[in-house]
Length: 355
Image 1 (cartoon, rainbow, N blue to C red):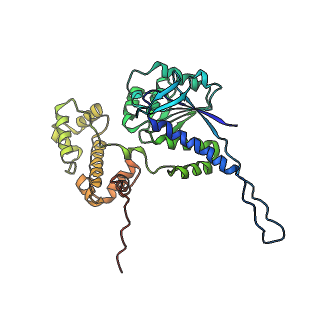
Image 2: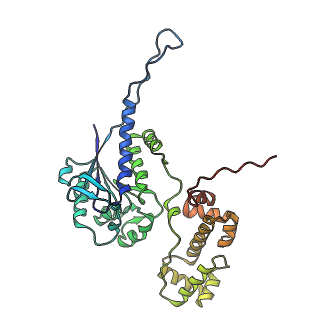
Image 3: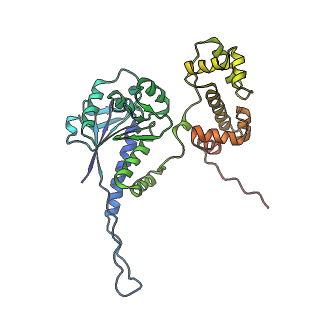
């Protein structure tokens, strides 16, 4: 018996959104084949007669992959490579066990494609579960499937998803989220994480772990997707006092900025400044300042500064405060962040000092 999985594709789809989940599911078949191989003939045991043959592990059910597109036939990906053999929703029958909607830049830009929405609506209707990779979440949101549910998408598009679909509870830091029969993942490579979670649900942690080993990936990657995002982008305020204050803080985040000093700089009361931040930026002065200092610390770490120097020059002050802020917002430590993102060169361990 096989589990049929439909991956919804379209012209402009992101290749890795398709190939990542496909390879995870293909590796389950490889695991099943290895489990089905006959065991080596046992040698003589310590006692009389041969040792009993070990009982083989039950093989996981393989997956049958089906590419589904609005019109069937070849699909040109965003990278220019062509996927062949896609079928229409009608040709994908009987009902699919799982549907995965791949992402692409065009999905986050209105208006939605009616043909693509109809395709997903048809194949999702009879599916046991429905998932999306990256901006595929916009399709599920357009169909109302994520209303009053938790979801995520690529960190760059999370705010747009939340703004465009206020009934969706967007979790911008999550790598993948499940709410009922609907699963959504962060950007691009996070489709691998999501599909490993599907495999674990179907076949258990050991099979998912075997697949992760083959693909040389984490079963659960450390930290959330905020650690991958670019520096904070503050929308331009409408009021001159707030605009001038923000420029001042961005120019020198390490200065002694507090709510009273920032209010004095803007020539307003602390209460009015808090109101301005909430109205124009959707946050508080303290939260915004912490994000500014965190972004400055990230930049300093990636350009070779020590943890102590980054803490001081960013305005966060101490190593402990810097670690706390990194853990709170990025789910990692300053040292781990620098090791992962500063360079592709593998760090060599430093020699221990001679005693």
